[in-house]
Amino acid sequence: MPNPEKTYAGISAAIAALAAGLFFLPGWIGMDGMNGGYAISFVAFFIAISAVIVTWFFWQRAATLDDIFAGKELLAHWRYQPEAWQSYTQVELQEQTTQNKWLLAVMAAWALFFGGLCWALDGDAGGLVFLVMLGMILILATVAFGMPRWRYWRQRHGPGEAWITPNAIYFDGVLVRWAFWGTRLENVAWHASIGKTPALIEFEVSYPSRAGRQSQTTRIPVPAGRETEARNILGRFGHKE
Image 1 (tube, one colour):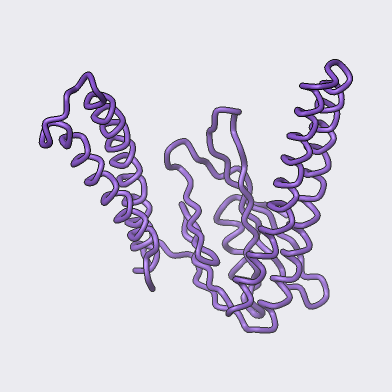
Image 2 (spheres, one colour; image 1 turned 180 degrees about the vertical axis):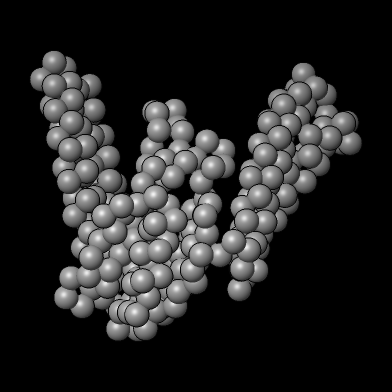
């Protein structure tokens, strides 16, 4: 299996190397520090340090993914039949679209409220603010409805695979790791099969951010005939039905 995290680490390392070269560029070409040389070196230094940190971050993730592919502490490795995968992708499209629709409605309501308030208080400048808010709503709507459909289009190219370990999951080309840089596993839940839709194991992971802890949910379908294995995994994470 290809390890995309190594690609990301390589790109970050290349950026760090280029930024390091840019740091010394003013001295190499004899540029006066007061005429932009110091500014170039400062920006390049900041970019280089940031790129080194990002490189280390992706390299750690790449090492985790290598361990997963090697079967280290592997709890499950699932492949999916095309019919089950198609049912899952359709359900995911509907689920994500519904969630994004409600989130978009809340954000649009606040944007219209503040935009309308500014317009009422100041007809000229406030009108411009209102137009900006309308543009922001249009961008948010494009993302809210476009991203689920883009993911659905990508998933239709073939059934994905799932790897589950005690500290990470790799599903549909996305690595989710907890107990790493402040991330933690908040909950593991079971969703029973409905019709042709397979049962799902839902992993909720939280991570720190400037706005407080944010959560990320990943729903992994359970292949037909692997329900017992899936329930054993739930027990491994302390889940009780």
